[in-house]
Image (cartoon, rainbow, N blue to C red; front, side):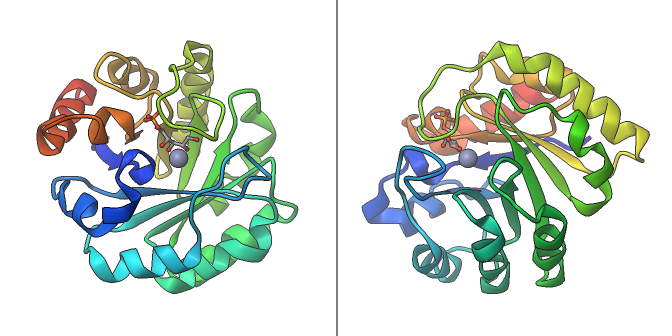
Length: 217
Ligand code: DX5
Ligand code: ZN
């Protein structure tokens, strides 16, 4: 499994997003947290900002939609050119249709699960996704403490993925830092979102490489 690092711009300076994207040239993805103040108690940005960011960086965008009614909005992020679009299982009313629309528009399709959402009911959807995202904090804010309680689910999800051929990526998001990332990697994660651990560091390039090194088993 190749380790991939996806710095979250939620912890970046929103007034200087192009510069903040350029500050992590060694990142595999740029994680963009779209929040609507309904699915989560926080409001961030939407499609116009994603469209502007797509013009400002060549790093592929990993859009994490923490919004109600992703069935309505997600395909537009894929059509705009996002490399990955992740919807939440708790919010989607027609996840199979929406995941297929994301793929049809040329993006990778992701399905996210909150800490208390079990993975087993979604096993039959594994052929519809390119990535599963397991939240390791309750979604909504950066800088929260990593929830160790999710580690057994990371292991079970890795086992499910392996049973189905191992093609699906397994992303973790929330509280991922130098002191927690190895636990996630050891449990089977291969794509790591890190907001405060990257954008809170003085040297962002070094922070990305330190995370990559710590996740490489
Ligand atoms: C939280 C977001 C995360 C957030 C992670 O709901 O989905 O992507 O940016 O921030 P850290 O890495 O600081 O926990
Ligand atoms: Zn996120």
